[in-house]
Length: 518
Image 1 (tube, rainbow, N blue to C red):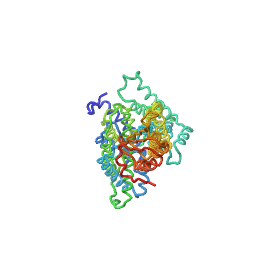
Image 2 (image 1 turned 135 degrees about the vertical axis):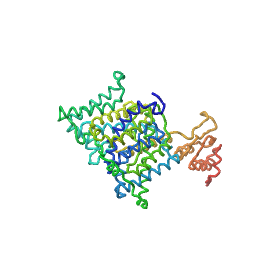
Image 3 (image 1 turned 90 degrees about the horizontal axis):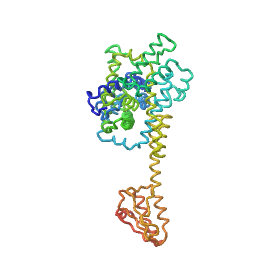
Image 4 (image 1 turned 120 degrees about the vertical axis):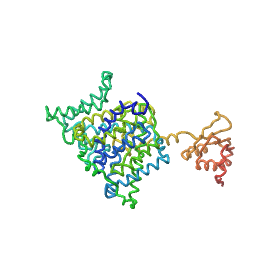
């Protein structure tokens, strides 16, 4: 494999990968638009812009952008609050401009403050969610929209109740197509099929799924799939019809403060999901390339500004399509751009042909991708790193599966932060650096001394025996909280009363702290 980013060097890998991602992105874009209460074509618009425009401006070679399921609840609520989809588009434009400002201000560095345990937990969680959400589609039960990631469903059920309902009435034809597709995906990567890998396995799966369903229609009609068991993309019959689907913002709502709050909410949530998806994509990139996060915010901002102007949904970096892109063998940004172009062309030129693709075949691709993201080895590695790492990892996975991605990330981050604080509390601040039995008790402060050490410092000082000699050396400390300085300063009075020879070294700021005496 080559690291050359040019189209000439990577077209053999990037074109097939772009085709695969376009096939997967189609139902996801439409499904997310449906769940968002927005026009179906708005999902396609954001998918096209996310692929062509964001893919070109982004610094990432493999991240795929488009409409995200994590924003569906925000979108449907915001449309209701603002009164119309056209009014909501103004908020999308504002969100894009805010993201550009964040990128220029280099706010992308925020992504580095999320621990690896949370990012890896997000990857595993997405994998588990993919498997759970695609099982009903694999069984021919399509009550939930394609691309759903939240535990609770619009119908009132949840992920598990949906699986149980699918198991009660499985569709034999869908199950056969899915199992056959999984067999192709599994065997295609073995050495026995090495010479036949001209096309990526997911593309072969789609072709096989269409062929099998055609065979069922002619030979075994009871096994054939139809209706909502097939891909359903909007069918555009004329240029006039296409132009009528491109909506424009209602700029009159700029006078309403609420539109700015909605725009800020979208900007913050979309930026967070993008930054985490970017880091996760970098982790599974075979070349381990690292993309600049602030540039990504600018790219997403440009994409959202354009999407809002032409009637699209908010755009973020999305890990599912990015993982599928990598699994399909993509080498450079060209696969992302090709996927956006093909998404546009296919919806205009061949929607009827694409609508013959069984969702069971697409489910097989996503099931395989989900298993790879949540591979047992990932759990084993997280356990081997240490229990604090594993705890944050596991909590991120479980919370995401039972709620949604953003809640899972926030809770996982909180657990990770808790263990950092716990480690800080368990790390002694005042450690006697002289050998046992020495007359002088010499304590050297670490680089960072926070208020979390207050109890430990107070207890150590209180336990000093009367008549002892004590020295606290702060020359190596870069920061000492006011609480600690005040505590140490106030101890002087106690030291005099207990006949303790108390000395301070390298702490000039201590003179600015008031000394309280009796």
